[in-house]
Length: 177
Image (cartoon, rainbow, N blue to C red; front, side, top):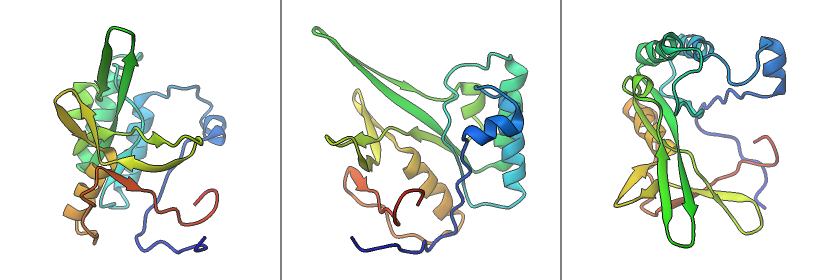
């Protein structure tokens, strides 16, 4: 309704899409060492924070050396936030909730990890996301909350996060914005 708005902060999103598979000639999941090389390339640009919104909740099928290649790159960068997923299974007699964090060998060198789940509205659109994921008797801070913390600690100016449990997405314009 308000039209396009230019962003105020220099944010770069590196996405994985169909062309990425063709260019690298690799099937998913990619070797974690590939993600590590990307982190090393990004680190050269001295970003305030790097968010890696890919789940690494199980050890690499390529072995511990592959996990170590990614973990080492995360440690070299020093400002990487990783993704975790929250799943919930509801049956007639129970509800099972699980957090799927990155494997320990990878997450121990990260600046943090947080939930990447979003709320899908009744019409199928995502208009907001939680700042924390409720899990049993505690809350797991969101991926975005961790990125905000790392970026502001590095000097990126920002307003404080809202005190509400969920934030509305401030879409900048139409598709691809």
